[in-house]
Image 1: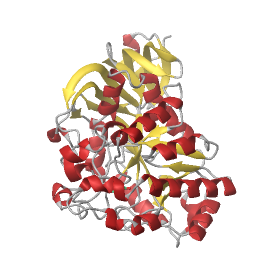
Image 2 (image 1 turned 30 degrees about the vertical axis):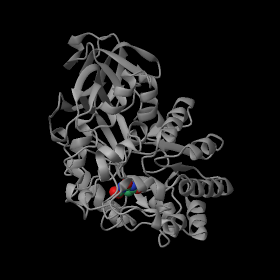
Image 3 (image 1 turned 135 degrees about the vertical axis):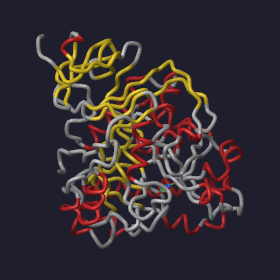
Length: 442
Ligand code: DOR
């Protein structure tokens, strides 16, 4: 082949639809132009990836980057720094900002703030509310829209739709896959007395398995009634996992690294309120069931649910402490450590973080190392041992629940549309984030 490329990634072990093998990848105009054996001389620039694994760019399908309105926790720039330092090339960001992302104008504002300021590519969920149901077909089609997100139980912020008739109308109105925070609001209210002041270990007792299950059953019933696709975010219970295994026609499943890695009661003993999130981290029975769902293929994608809060906000006495933890920067190393421990294959990791999001959400031109696709790569060293620390965290929150955790497997390079954005822990080059495109959206 005598073609020349802008960049050749040489000698890395490529993980894609074709399996796992040493291949070169040639990149032209920000897209993958060739895969095979390419001469170094064919590349304007060459990355020597010998000994490294070249994965399709990791897509994190759930992050909260807090801009506008809550920039003391995070902003689009700082959140995206964490993303690319952690090997993430694209994120889907959540609508519980201030103001809420519930209109075309507010979505356009987020896209304008993000373009060429975020280091990774992006899409924004639009919050589904009682007021914007008639606009849903339009909101799903806008540039930068990841589709509709609904909070069925309240969490951080003011988004909530808990009545049957509004949920029925929203699900009837969607045409793309919509995402749901699935906890039953009525049960959460009814059980508030279960919370023990100062004891975050009571968080999973309050927001119990049944609260998640009631909501997920209702969600799937409405999805089947309308024959619409629903995405159940951060599934945290054994009961939901068993139920969803029997309802895969319309429901897809996301899990978080936190629910796969942390476990109660230990996490509350060691981390206190820093382990508090919604839905909660639960005991070993649930963690085991989530791993089994993952192994069985019931789980479609991983989302970090990166939900930064300042130390001050986390340090309030439970239950005044805020729910959520950082995660976008630690998704790759924490999950690669599970690969190193033999709990997960590298192929399945790629299925969860690239092929899975591409398939579920109909992402245009991303999520695969294939000719014609965007040249997005997460380059990792599966053998490298590192310790995760608060100091590494780019998030404004400045902390990680994994502080002090020794991991095997580390992201060493992040390439977004053919440009090296991160190499060996340094951000290089300007931010050139752009909206992710969707087959059924914009
Ligand atoms: O723990 C959580 N924090 N769960 C959510 O659903 C929202 C998030 C946040 O935005 O802080």
